[in-house]
Image (cartoon, rainbow, N blue to C red):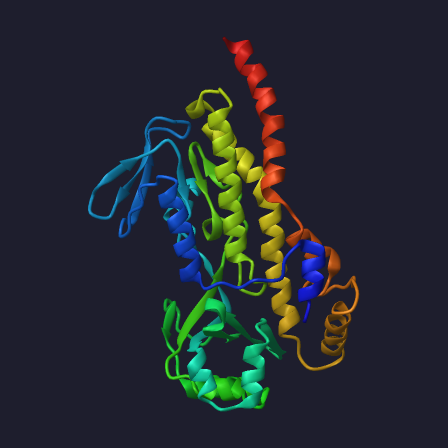
Length: 354
């Protein structure tokens, strides 16, 4: 889909890609500038609280025995979240999806070294390219301003139970995508090192918070990578939660007393949107992996039409209404408005109690 110009007109910018390490650096620098005390290698072993409603005695034990206490604990600890187990009250590991991903990275010079004009043309588009086919698909996109490129191949999992990742091999990748676009198979044939990642998901959680503890990102709404919105949803979570806690601090209400309520407000604002995203990724999996035939041809026609005019279709990647819901939302503005309504009620209740 060449939807760049449409995206700019409707949403103010084109679809952007960034390498995860570069985004981590941006967030790290911003946190340091804001005065955060950042630590690496501090793995959380478990959480503790004197009681579910406690706002004074909540904290974490790190591997090695160190205890760290806080007014608020945000579990942004990913798919295998320790914090999620604390919030739910039981061990709740993710579930295998049945799919896996081969992930490879190329330097620009490596691809130019293939001396393939069609591959070079693909590189110079500066866009995300997706190949779809029966039970599998592939995605190619630039990072580092076009100095590097990522290639992700998604297909049925063949890794043993209990194995989450392992080294892949070129023959396996070539076999899975035999007969596909020559540009894709040329790039696959040149890969010298690749990792295989098993893809997991998790059923929707009943709750995200427990007292002054909240979940964020993949810890509470892990999504399959079929919509490229996992990191975006986690970033929105962080922006909304940070905004709400900052507004609480400025509100003249006693911070600690109302932290659990503000965390519940955060959950109420984020849960529906992130659930829609997770379900959209599941739907896209079916769309990408359709067998050849009439439904595949209808999908391709809808995608082609979506380049020219707004389309209403069952395929979410082409549906204008779905794209508008996902990309046209201003979550920070919505949370500020919701907080104003919330704080007025609690100010009245607080004044009545003193």
